[in-house]
Length: 406
Image (cartoon, rainbow, N blue to C red; front, side, top):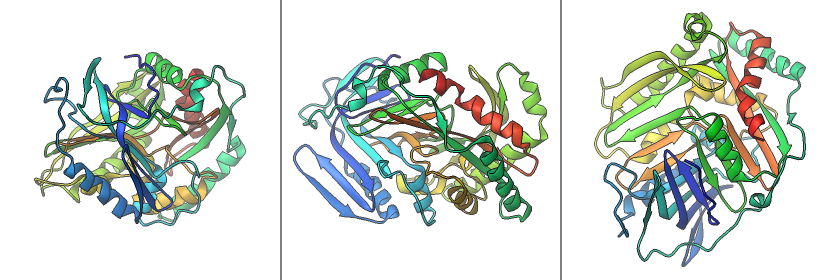
């Protein structure tokens, strides 16, 4: 589906495009801002309190009147937006030493208009916020070459540091990333459409605001919650598309990576699931995209009735596949080793609807735009068996489609 331009903040995920919000929730520097068509206010809240506010906000919403009601099987009404990786660190009670000053911990909109699979629905008598166009939508072409925050030698030195942590037994797997930056005058919308067309990914999405845009070509799902059923889909193992995917299935190193993360995710789900309900329903199956093959697993669980969004998100975020194992210590290692904050990278974008259903991706293969400034990260899981040269090359392979789109 090719997206059309909307002048107000809007979000797109899983065939749903929400626009013309009546409310925006933005959390940054310990302040939760609520912007409404009639009024706005700020609350000083701790990260877990801000997440609880979001959870309670959803529970207070009543189903609005629509010009044409959306089908019951689809998104009904609710919040759409993203959470940053550093917000995940804060939920893990880790010290955050550096942050992207322009990237909020989370940014969520309550749309009054949404499109579901090319069908439009409007909320009746709900006043939308005024238009807030993004300067990047005036852009037209690429101006600078890509620059990385790590040279190849620096990346190898970081890998050696990771190896030291692995040898000490502090961690078993670390997801290490490098950041690429450039400037671009291409349309935010055109970049998303080109990525979507050239590399269709099941969990791609877009958030556009007055100050920034998040453009994601992600293949990975953090979780899907439908009523009391929840599933998570960790990815570990990457191979060039030109290679035989059987090589990936035969790789002991990639098998060990995925099995560690599957155990981590089972443990995360076990914090909130009905005891005995957590099951690995599919293990190490192949999904192929235009430039890579991946191995993926599916873990399902049943939740107690009335499990809140806060409980689900605190248990699973950030995704184990983009931190490593164990999650808390490894997240700390990542934050100390990487020279720049991740921001939206390895955060999550998705929606929460008034029926209690929610879906979020993992923001890999994702571009961050502020006006003409563009950045994106690319990384991979490092274990004691990792080869430094192949790990570096893997980050370049994963970044290929993003570079093409820019």
